Amino acid sequence: MMIEAIILGIVQGLTEFLPVSSTAHLILIPEFLGWQGDISTLTYDIALHGGTLLALLVYFRKQWLSLLTAERPLLLNIVIATIPAGAAGILFKDAVSTTLRSSYVIAASLIAVGVVMLLAERNRPRRGFASIGTKDALAIGLAQAVALIPGVSRSGITISAGLFGGIEREASARFSFLLSMPVIAGATLLEGVHLLRNQADYDLSLFAAGFAASAVTGFITIKFLLWFFRRFSLRTFVYYRFALAGIIIISYLLQKSSA
Image 1 (cartoon, helix red, strand yellow):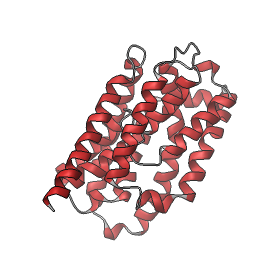
Image 2 (cartoon, one colour):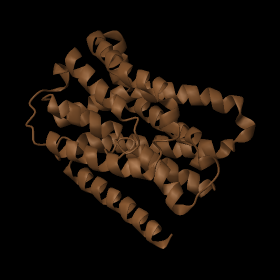
Image 3 (cartoon, rainbow, N blue to C red):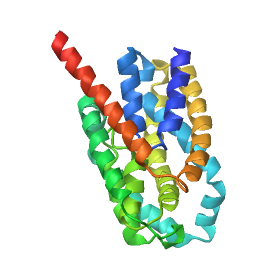
């Protein structure tokens, strides 16, 4: 079980920032491989998100210090952009943790948002990070709220929203990563309280291993993606999304035909 916990931590560290949906992978991998127990719960998923939160805090530590001291307008924009996802998370928490954790919802989301990403790449953005204003923040924040649906991908939908608004890909990615911190922090805090209150029900060593793997992998992935998005488009990830959706659909059809 420890190996599986570390593998899922690495998967989270990669897919939280790659525009391919970390939630989808954390649901599908245990389901396809038959992994059971703590590592297939929403609480474990949130613990892994805590690892990527640590990666964000470490990587953007200078940026956050600047936000708190000199870049107050940008900090306000991040707060504004966080509100839609926070409200949606509270209102639809039960649906997100039950009904929407379906392979069919994931497949549909992978395809739909993949199309959105392709359309976003048709724009030729010219605006940099410093140009992001309140209207941009609100539009990107609304997009982030949609990412509660497994398969959507927070980074994929928010970067696409930035591209639609004329913001360059790397700048959109940077804002997306900064914007993810309050939402991940809120979810981690809520589930962390639940975990501490019910720690006897969980194997905390699995949580610690997954958390560490997620943090290390997440840090490396952030650094790589900010370099990648300065040079390359989202299309590679779109093709991956379509392929994964195809695998899910084929798997469903095979199960149906053998039933």
